[in-house]
Length: 241
Image (cartoon, rainbow, N blue to C red; front, side):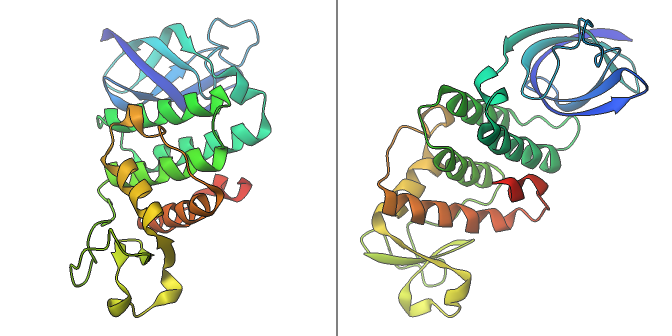
């Protein structure tokens, strides 16, 4: 038995008994872990502050089989998200993807940084929600090992960066000569291609430091949706978007 301190965010929660919760924490030090919060469903409980989107330092009592919360020091509550239905829907989408693709006790600090970045962006109100979603999808897929090819044709290898129009599949770009199944792709311009390249190659802290006009944004969103087909899981919260 031991006392452990972790920094992380609540990405899911489950009711337990009459007034308790099981919190699913996505942490820097231990990856995804489950932690029991006794009495957390009581309004006056000191653990009632532990809700979805709560980013905090957690002190845990750890044994061989489980963790239990003994202290919570909040870093960020993302209050604007909590009070806006649209932002809640987008945020839940991010949380569900991470919860369903992460394994217990597997360190994934890059994914945690990405989640905090997009939640902070939603909370700031400075960016369009659909733009944040597309950036998240492209970066998440890239970090998860599904980085699309954006420089050369995935089939013949010819350079496409100066091509006015490109076919974009879940593996990346395909030149016109190699295109056989156009219904499985989207047509994107070189401007969109450069935007995708910027996201997948940039540090997480910089991934939102660019702007797109409406036409390029629509292509950008189609590309991100296609890349996410590599993540073969059912995401229920997608329907709310």
